[in-house]
Image 1 (tube, protein in one colour):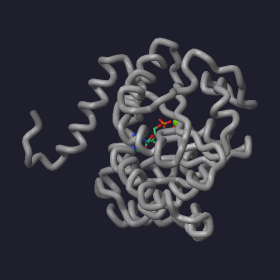
Image 2 (cartoon, helix red, strand yellow):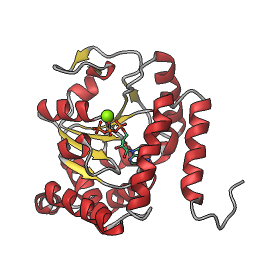
Image 3 (tube, helix red, strand yellow):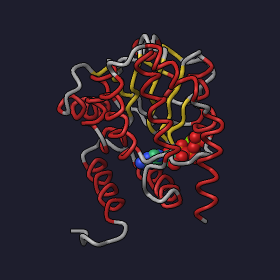
Length: 243
Ligand code: ATP
Ligand code: MG
């Protein structure tokens, strides 16, 4: 039990969720370390959703609502931390959900798919079948399924820099959730959300609820007035100020 007043309580609870996810075979060993890198940056942004992050979250949702074929690409950490929000967001913006793992095994894909289905995702793509190949990528993640191949907008919470770049090169608009505004992922994405996934996903669900009936014009205004470079600079400034 973590004491109620512990200053890092929420952060420690999230950590426990990941350890649990690891024990259940959802999260990879390296996923635990990646979370550590995220925690350090979360400390620096004050462990709360900034105005800067909120802007990116709204723009990301507008982009997904405008998309022809939006996809949410899920890894072990995302599935362990917020399966319910993935399901809700997917349903609100009509996105397909696919499993995509760096340390790939069909067994882990199936476990993640089961967690997502239990949380309310009707169909999970990318389990045991990855017929398409992203050019110029070395890792396992170059193999992708049809859903991702055909997408125009992809939400990749907790993505890797190489793959973000490759997806952008394929002509896709990439939305990344990454607490480090200086990572390659952050710099290569179309919309970068510098926020913890455990806060960003519920925020995006809220925005989606509000915006899902908005007309195309309003959504375009939101997307057009968002400037990712500027937003990232501001996120970096926020961190520097906190030091
Ligand atoms: P890149 O591959 O983009 O250059 P990296 O190699 O530094 O980045 P990785 O180890 O590939 O980073 O992945 C970890 C990334 O995920 C870190 O940038 C970290 O900030 C981010 N991250 C980890 N956990 C979370 C989380 N819960 N919410 C948001 N971001 C997170
Ligand atoms: Mg990386």
